[in-house]
Length: 106
Image (cartoon, rainbow, N blue to C red; front, side):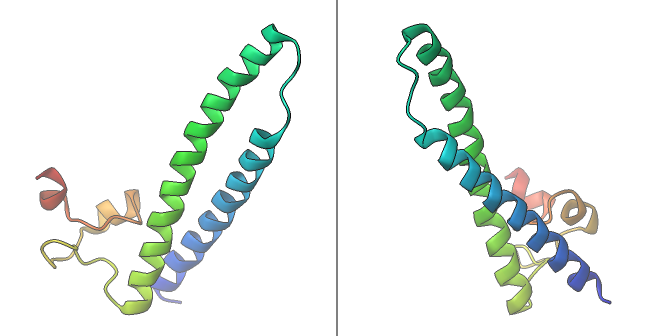
C-alpha cells in the first residue's frame, strides 16, 4: 500500500468526522432557545463557541477536499505557488498544506 493510499484513507476518515461534527453543530444551533433570559444568555455564549467550531470545521473540510482533489490530479505534495515539493515533515503535520515552508512564510 502506498503512502498516498494511506494518506487518502486518513483524509477521508477525518473528513467523515468533520462532516458529522458540522451536522451535530447545525442541529444544536437550530434548537429553540430557553425562555428564561439568564439561561438564554448562557445558550447564546454556547452558540458563539459552536459557530466558531463550525467555521473551523468547515474550513478544514474545504482544505481536505482540496487535498483529495490534488491526490487525484497527481499534484499532491507540490507547492501551489512555487511548484516545489512540500517537505514530508510539513505534510505530516498539515496534510492539507498547499505551500512549502518558504512560501508559507512569505
